[in-house]
Length: 389
Image 1: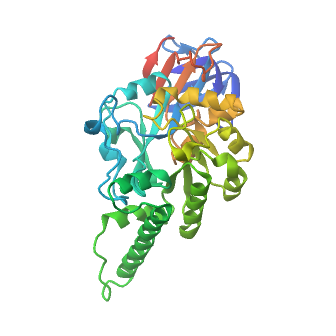
Image 2: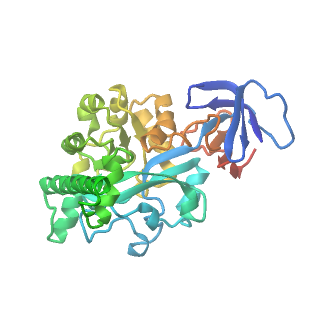
Image 3: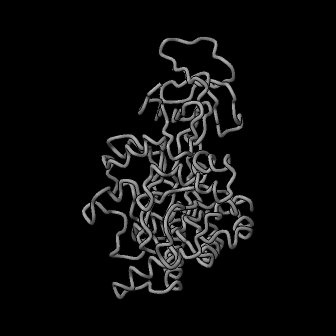
């Protein structure tokens, strides 16, 4: 099936094709070109000059792991019985029947990173999923990495329990301790495999096993931090353990944007359209995304759903544009850049031959970031979720 007569924002090396076409086949993008295709059939779609984009990607959410309209019964985001839980997997807490998945799809959001929360110094494994499906295993794109949290949240949660950590020092120390022990565990495993006649294997430890891909840089370390000093702590720990690191939120990133850029650490910026709801967000400024981008920081924009409902992801980007962010940079911050940051760029984030057929079409004149805009067509894995053209 072909979509033609479209202005295509490929978010790839092909840039913007002013009048182009693409073909979807077997769940993939099978062809792409400018002008008209060689042939058009009755089943093909005339975009009538509309704008074709990759599906939007929200790089930090709690979609389906905090269910809509429920309290404790539907909140599986934080295992607050232990401040260090790398063995937890977001995949095991997601309800794909939560109605917010449909709200995401209807606004062109075709993939999302679903994360454990930030109550713990280490919350667990982040997964990237498509926003359509009945079984989360079938929706999985990639397990992206491990979620850590610095700053206010672990302090507040465990202070209420009269347990550690209650200081920023203790939070960082817990993370270091876990990583050091995982490194020793890996060393002991290597010793056993290289000389199993003289060495016994270490006792199995689910926490350390979960951290091994991180130490091998096969997964990324995602650090929740708002304040500039917490961002610097994340960068300090990342250097100590040679971690492939991502900053989540980065609310005060504009204060140290040049330093973040120098360290070549990407930032998933958001939530943007919310109030300064806690002390560590006092420094929130609408200019944050723009300043980060101007300094060369690799930037994605997120909702942190349920903090901001996921369907307002494009509106979050529009707010960042109001704060000075270039509009094309904003579109990239919803497509190819988040895909790259969460390690899913081989499948999603751009319109390119061989990638998943996750696309959305806006009628001519509609602003993809606009409050009143909705895509006339959404396809995920080549299957139409919405088709009004």
